[in-house]
Length: 234
Image (cartoon, rainbow, N blue to C red):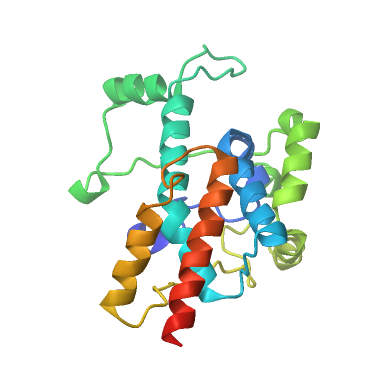
């Protein structure tokens, strides 16, 4: 955002997510809606069904078998969430979709590609360190448990240490935790192997099942087919 629109314009709020408590609630809802289901599923594959997350072929197989299903769950969940009513203090209940639609009618839609002006908002902020924190929601035990479980405590500590000298700064911490997403490629060496594997997977009865128990069977059968093809070619 800062590379696209420039620094010191509020295009991106650096810092801990507690400065935007709504995103904390959203992550909690995502986890409860479908995220934890997949986390539990992949963990079970690793503990019981032979998944080795350090073996690139296994990670590729996970992507091949389940990434479309994860994306499908995410899209379905987002559609449901965008049309459910939010309960907000000092405001009427409305869905995110309705809020976006009626706000667009009232204020228009800002198109950054069109070069439209950005109206600066002058606001006196008495304590930038606590800006945006909803203390009432931050005391929510469920939110705190979710935040503690799914956030790296080292990242929080590094941010606090980095910000100690300049509490009013709006800049990234010196030691941000990078998230690198490596690319994984099919472990096959010939088109014949690819065709054999695709044919084997297409014959698995649970190929397109949405039952998590049957998906474990899909994983086992696809893993056996993968190992057999790679063993023969070795």
